[in-house]
Length: 189
Image (cartoon, rainbow, N blue to C red; front, side):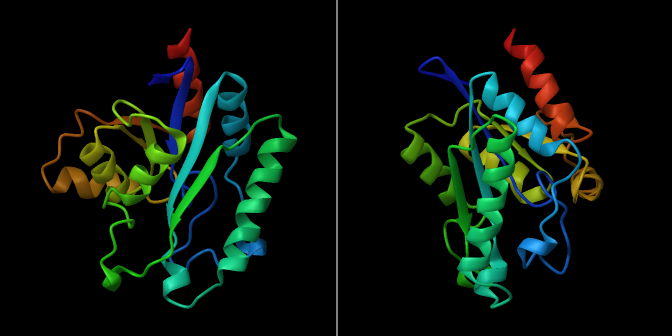
């Protein structure tokens, strides 16, 4: 979606930008970008896209890592993107564990509402690129354009949604973030 001449894209983090783990990404040493993901973010940014990240980080609520460690991971992400000539405008995260039943844990809309408010955007049609069922659900819930990458939990997500009878008719599917970025950049011209 174009907002004041700039387009916006919202990215999930684990499994989209960096490797994911069922044991959680708990330290900067464990945080490893997926091939092409940093370049993809930089390319989108250089083409005029405003980039936001929306990520569930229940490891904080579960006591597996600290806010300081999470901030260090996000600092590294920003440094890597900046070194490639790009920028991430905002990183919004939910620190709560599922039993807390907060409004910010995807698939609830709180993180995206925070991004919309702080970036002063309308979420309608904004690509939300993720790898999980909750990413697809929250995109649909707020009127964003759901986009699934097959990295991280992506392939498992396709299987889960199809088994549940979801046709995925409204979901763009890409091999990875680099392929999704390439598609978005072609659309822009």
